[in-house]
Image (cartoon, rainbow, N blue to C red; front, side, top):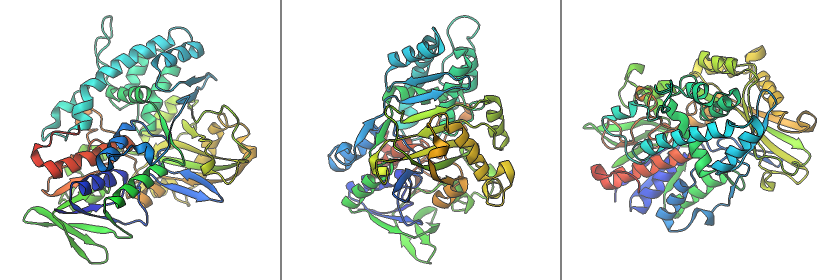
Length: 506
């Protein structure tokens, strides 16, 4: 039985902890905050409850596998999963309104043809076929296996070229896929919104990001009754049932290294805790910044750390009046100025007309009573480092650069999706990348690993350069998002339990 210390109680870290405990190891989790879940947080006030991280679950199979492997019982015995239908509603700049059914390619094609014109659905369907090719080529090696010592093969983009005609040269970016293959500004905006939701700039992210809409439309979108935070509650409870020890309010300040191997951690209160293995679930950039790994300059960092430049603004809205019948759970209100939005993201400034995602769960567990509604509105924004984030989002920022001013613009967009929003508003809570940093240690929100782009979107490998030190969670392979962080926990547990012979999750 090995002694294992886990740094941080995020979702990937807890997934690793539960699996390692089941394998017979003694696992202790040290978390600097007073709660678990990492970015899967919750905000409560006056009987209203809001998810402050992800609002929907994709690829629930990842978490079903965790519960089966750590207790031989289904995930559904611990949380109530609801398939969201329609999966999303989209309001485009020209006033077009389309609702896309959940996990139904034929239904999506028909809905797009009806709303955008004949042929629109067919072009989207043909795009999804190419996206499936990219998914099939990269799924197993990129998501379910440890990152190899030489990951250069992932520097090549798996998204295929269009066969025949003048488009034989593969598209280089997702924005180029939209222009060349979809040939409709609304379809292009639909495609780009999937990249924005994960914090990617469509103008620079490789065409392989096509797997993001494919994944969602193939495996569906799910809601956890009581909010996604209920999933974090269930994973924490599973860890406790497997005798994982949690120590909250305990900040790890260093990883102890002896004879070139990780042998424990040092805490802010001066204590030293010995361990046979250390699993770092905290943001990898924080470890680099604190010189834990001995890399003293940004040139030494994996390129992924520098490529993640975006964060999120989330506005929690407490509304009087019940949610109307038939309201969509998720509505994407697209920017009326896509060019400026993407230019602003690339330049590190705030745009005037952001694309916003409006979540209206209609879940009585989130409300003081049936005469109110809890709504969250999110937008992808530049995050910056500590100094620039404080300047961009701090209380002293003036005019359009202020958080409240940007929230005003978000609500102006969201009003298209929520009838009478302004008149119904009781209060709002604005959360920025500064809040993300306070709760997770990073201003940015990492996205999933993607092939292409010369390997710049590959997170840190789960096995660190220091023997005995492993990485789990959104900043490590295979990247951010609920599903991917859960995969990282499975990979770390496999590497520790099976060692060098481990070939990936089954």
